[in-house]
Amino acid sequence: MEKGGMGFRFARETDAALVLDFIRRLAEYEKLGDQVVATEELLRVEIFEKKHAEVLFVLEGEREVGFALFFHNFSTFLGRSGLYLEDLYVLPEYRGRGYGKGLLCRLARIAEERGCGRLEWSCLDWNEPSIRFYRSLEAVPMEGWTVYRLTGETLRSLAQAGK
Image 1 (cartoon, helix red, strand yellow):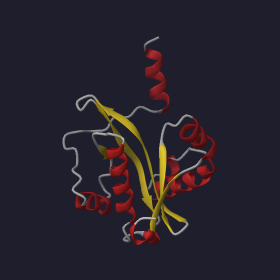
Image 2 (image 1 turned 120 degrees about the vertical axis):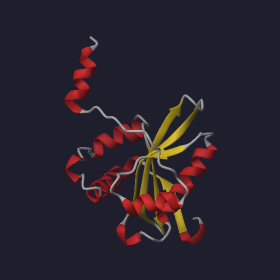
Image 3 (image 1 turned 135 degrees about the vertical axis):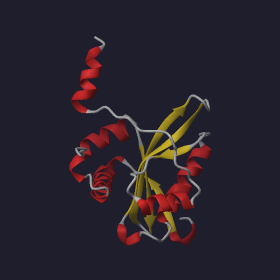
Image 4 (image 1 turned 60 degrees about the vertical axis):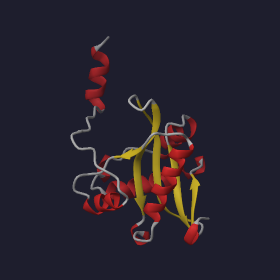
């Protein structure tokens, strides 16, 4: 346990259902619930077998009240890996108690311990409460950068184009 009774633990394979529950709650908050196609089995394979991501829970006592899903990326400019925070979510009834900041502090510590050059994430433009929170931690938005994405048929089409 850390200060104020806040604790942390990494997810285990038996937590796949809990991880999926947090993902669904986050998606609903972001008004993207209809886009969640992940299943417990997919998460079990991708996170715990293939180790493509890690999940850290923040605890109040023994209860998981928030989570962070993250993975390593790489900066060619820095010549070092970094941590990319894909998802951060704290249950609504536990917000304002320092759990989100606790997760980010712990992730920053993990990044430092692993020799990472940075910790970064994306935030929806309309999410003013989160933007204010991130700025309060002195995080800076990446001005002039736009995220691009290929999925589904577009991804398959491009993959086939080079054959």
